Image (cartoon, rainbow, N blue to C red):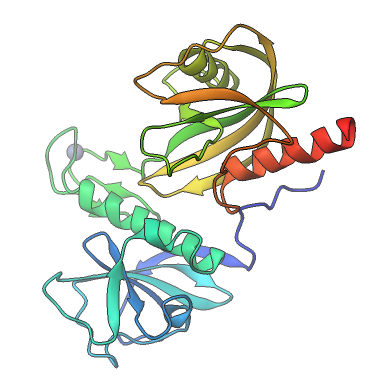
Length: 283
Ligand SMILES: [Zn+2]
């Protein structure tokens, strides 16, 4: 079976966990609080070149090597937010989504999730002792009781619901004007991914579906999710939206679609897949 590579890294990355040193040449993902330092001169490509923080006069407060991209070491680091770094500006990861190279964005997302994990797991949740980094592994470890804590990843399902020539799309209150997208939601404790897909569609729109099948997945570092994409078929029901979650939901004909999410999202991939297959069948 051909492996789905839609949102996977294009080039080779080997994860590793080691101490980092600011005088090593590598890809540096340096955060000022939650914002990534990006070169002002080349906002879309500048920091993709390997550099050495020490040579640029950057004082890092925490550094960690998290892997090798095409054999070049990748480092995560933080700086004191008061530190001004000449020719570089801190930018939120959301603002970089779709604006920088996809592999670069993906590595930045990885770095930020590791940083969150380290910051948010300082003490053991069982006995209160200070946690330590576990050697060679992306985990925090309690030297007193042995508790091990891995980075948290919250799975979310996202689905296209298709009824012949129509697809079910909804819009949340914070969406860009006129934009609609596929429905999505977090997986709850104890349910399968397919159950989560059926429940979300039912809760948000009162529509019943069947034929739920997996398409692909996308890491979603906002702040620590993975989006798991499905297609499903309409079975029965009329649209009644949950107004807590949605502002509107409608059936859209494949030849008359609203504003759609950006091409690099899994939502768009699912919608494009629907359009292609509708064109084959009905054009
Ligand atoms: Zn403990």
